Image 1: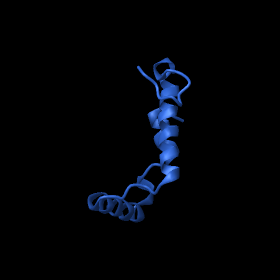
Image 2: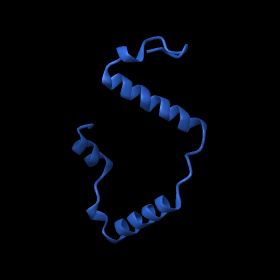
Image 3: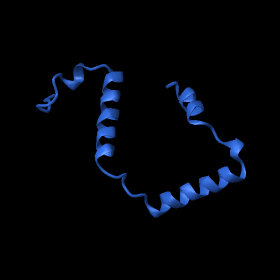
Image 4: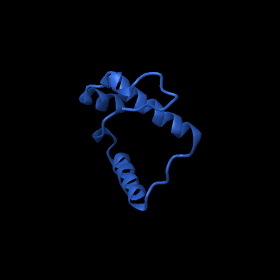
Length: 74
């Protein structure tokens, strides 16, 4: 695998956790430099639907911490 000149180590030499962190860091650096991509109409409608449902029954959802625990990422 060839590397970009800015990378000091072959990506394949990194652990899976390190590669995931690298991908997250790269994505965060992109978001820091520009606005988020626009949502589609369907995405906006879905978010509106979910917000309305949450406002009707706020106890039905899960917190981000609960979701992370279920995914084993806490």
